[in-house]
Amino acid sequence: MAERFIKEASQLANLLSKMYGDRIQIEDNPLRLTNCGVDGVFDSKQFGITFQGDFLILSVEAKGNSIIEELTAILKEVMGGEQPLCSYDLQDNVRKERIMPTIEWDLCDPEGRVKELVNGRGYDGDFNILNLKLYNSKKVEDYLESEEEKQEKIKDARIYGIDPGCIDVKSVKDMSEFELFLTIESLGAYIWKIRHEMAHYRIPYVDLTEEDYGIEYLVYQTTRFGVELEEPTVDKHVEKTPSYNAWYQFYHNHLYQVLTKEQCQELSKIILEGGDYSSFLPSGNWKDLIEKPTQKRIQE
Image (tube, rainbow, N blue to C red; front, top):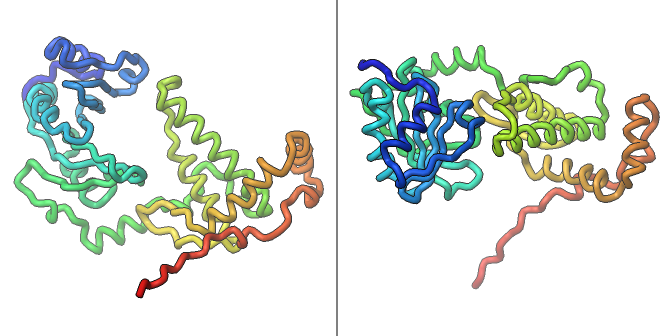
């Protein structure tokens, strides 16, 4: 491997600007560069680079493969002359139509990284990996985990819905249904706010791993009150069902559309003091809000 002449995202941004001039516009955001990211537009196409010394990922907007082909040559030099590890299409799990051609290098643990990608652990639940292509002499099938490896991994794995993350299990054990909703609402709002601030580069990167485990643990606790959710398994997030959506909407509507601001303040005070707040609870049954499956009539 040749000597590495660039080791930081800011250096990479300067190099690309000098090389490509007006063809490239690097997003001017010092905080993003500090967090190992280089974003911008190259030949009118969006791109994003994650660069952490021995690890580099380049993703471009759909139909931007020509950008990858051109940038690969200079990025190969940045990575000490090493060939890319692999390429693939990164699919947004929410907006399925959003597919980003991607290429990456890993000089620290290439075998381990490929194993992560092949066995579905390369990204969190927000993305799917499609059309994975390796640039070594092996096949994708060579990295599939054996049943024994899977069982060993399961034994030591953190499982969403089971692992409490940042949550104090004892405090949740005795929560009422409405108190559980309020806790989910509070933690969810916190996670959303931090992610929103990070996305707009207003704050440095914050690791929300424990909060992510925490809120999925709370969501799964709703099964104590009749909510139907799939049993947690390794490498799978707790997916919200029509049953959970009905439960959540039932309390959400009551809190934000029925109770007044003054009532909410009084309710908070009563809960903190351990008093009786039954008069503030919604009437009816949340199960009445569960979406009923529609049946299509066969046209004769």
